[in-house]
Length: 566
Picture 1 (cartoon, rainbow, N blue to C red):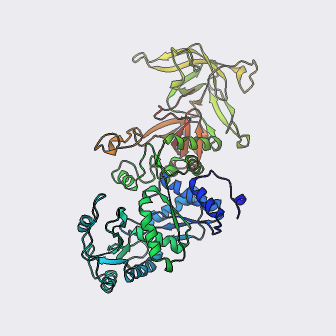
Picture 2: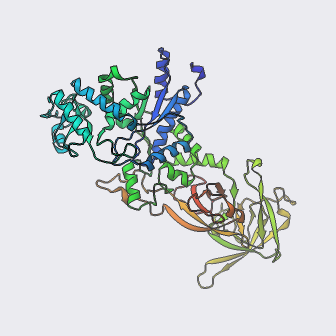
Picture 3: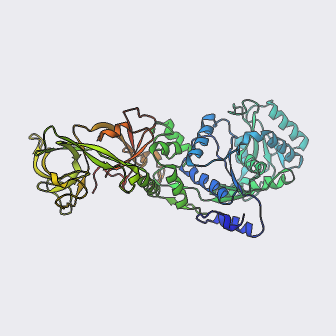
């Protein structure tokens, strides 16, 4: 493949590196991998890595593997592994036959560990975890060598085999790489390669009681699979010398030599990108589960109604850099709006109803208006919307004493009903006890129906409505940002991120919707005109009883009160 064959895509420093390799004569197939640990559900930060790894492979005609780096059985499960696969598929990517597990390589990894001992590059250590920390040193002081560092290779081999056979309790011994206890990079100070850990593994069962550490298993798994470019986030930059060290020590036994490249992780405002913190949100009951629509998990965003195409567009828009930065939530929300503006059909609903009575309309009269399902897509068709003498409009669409630029309904003023007539407010009815407005009495002009009314009269305001006789009540969930602060927990020493939870992140309301919406299918999208984009909840909806999740408002108006708008 030459440069002209590569699909166009925004350039980034990783693509520039690959282009430079190819210009220098490299012709190897580009093989990347997405290597999650199956210890939780993927979040929007992982989506950036998924899009990058699969996108790079596709751009250069290569392939991307999906590999579960399952080296910590205490925290991993089938549930998480299956959820990861489903999330990657939902985003629109396919690994084909290239699904792998680090646990597939346990035997080879173990044999290579024995080889490191033979080559004088590893030893079995009896220091406890606390002692190991004390020996490790600090950023300014070198570490101290373990008393077991010069243990004979034959003795270390014997102990390692007995560790594998289950002769010792957890924590009795570890296998450590022999590198440099005075290295400025703390990761090179004789890191642990294997530990004894008696936990049932979701794939290998109880076959093993020693497990490789991530920093050991990861580069060797990459090499086994022939990965050419190991793309990871910046927190692994200090681990790269260790990644390369393992590859160098076993170079003659490995089928490939991957190259690790780091990029900036996604930091998204008003949320958390830590699996540990997300797990705490779930376990402490701040959210209803991993798929709570307020969560930044991909299952949560999916249930909220975020289209996968919008997430892919977001990942492309924010780009790939080498410096950590914060991305505002509004960027993601804008991508969602752009996608749904094209895809979502329209419908009418009222959230805060105010009754309107057309005094000059027949008491028993009923008609239906033709309503386009999408204003820019004629192919989306139309529907019939029922109309009668009594209607509901949004309370915010009426003001008794309006300011100069208020173009909605007011005493003596006219507005157009969406798809319907121009009406005029003639009288305001109030509750005599409270003074609250309870009803508007209006008249309508029969000559003003349709896009080209007979008298050619126009008004500045158009408002939405529902027929009081035909509208149906429906549950709506007004989701908002999970936290009130862009960086939860920051700004004050000792501040708990829980203090920044948004108490208004989910408000459950009842709306009045046009009758056709009661048949909306679970998982379908709709724009409720002038209110926002909504998604029929796939978990709690029932036939004839949809539950509508707010995806985003119509514009960037965080914490906007329900409904209304010009």
